[in-house]
Length: 311
Image (cartoon, rainbow, N blue to C red; front, side, top):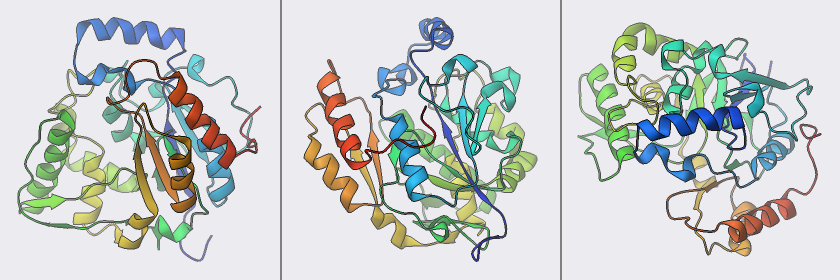
């Protein structure tokens, strides 16, 4: 037991391996049926940076109890991963996602059912493989007295959709929580990892499960009408499950990759901020080999030592 929380803190990271032939065959089949933004290459592209996520967690978050790696199949496990590590738990999608949604290529479905994962602590952090915890993290920056920590608050008003499907996903989440609270609310988002409580997700599904699942039907890939894991984040804020600590937002940085992104800017971000997201996106086009080399070179210079999670 720490001086900040009575329960341990775990971290979850979902991952898709585009080199997994079993997974890629299914992905290719469903992609031909549905053609939309959820099938864009950046959703599955691998720059080879995932091992640095493990290096950063081991170095800068030693208080993490277990790492839960979520993958579709056994064949998806990266070849460099030490699967016998005592702090690693590998979870397959069919271990916790309702079978009616499988196979799925929709990250919203993968994240909304985290509360079904066996052995996962009530206090957990949801992260992604493009995040780098570049400086030592404090436990109290994520949970205080077993309450999740959130950087931004919310205010009264209506949230309007934008040109992208994700803009509408944000609006859907705002509307969903606004309906629960009985007043229109606008929530702010930031591209980082999230502190979640299993019991709160279970509460949402107990009260509103039918409504949530209705928005996920016919959604092998992300859809404009989906609810997302943002309902957890927004709901924890509105219902005062979370603690507001705005200062941590200053230490997180979104680095939207571009074909001409240079190594020095990547290193500067890693040195300046405590958490950096090197986000692949639709602006990275064509041949990405040189960009990948620069990214890996920066990460290897910043985190040169192999973690115990690597073979």
